[in-house]
Amino acid sequence: MLEGRIKDLEAEKRQLVEMSAKFGCFLKHNAIATVNDSIADYLEHLIDLEKGKIGAGGDRNTLTELEKMKKMYEEEVKILEKAINDCVLSVEKIKSLYDELCHLPIAGPMLKNAMIVIEAANIGAINTKEHRIQKPPLFGNRIPASLSPKALLWRDFVL
Image (tube, rainbow, N blue to C red; front, side, top):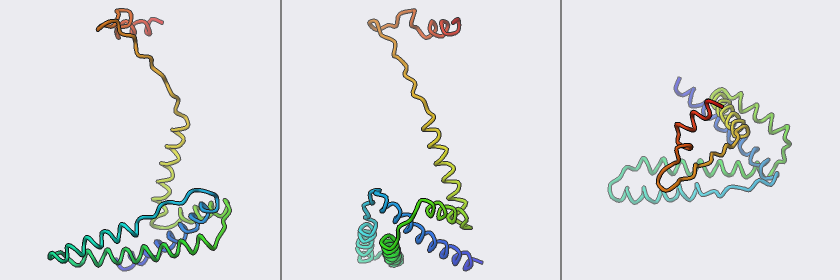
């Protein structure tokens, strides 16, 4: 059961990496700035730190896992770079890729929910109106009786 789940996750991960490469290709060809990729450097830094810890009697498992992670990351970067250099995608193709992502059995529902939240936030941001509230002027250290909170509430209620 667990092995089956791991295989499903690995297969979906490969699909996600390939699709991200296609999305990256689309972004690259549509003049969206690339991102500064410092993950490999950061992983190398963590590996160096772990090597120092092992010299002082630390656990070797963490080092092994970090090295696996770096190797896996480098393989994914190669896949992404190859896909980016080999393709040009249309908006329609991007939409179909998005639909494919949403139909993935494991990551699909999470992606759908994330997009619903993002779209709702965007709609809320667009529909929000700015309201300016004027601060009442102070006269010395006191507010005039006509501008006191009670007077303002009563005046708004009466109007």
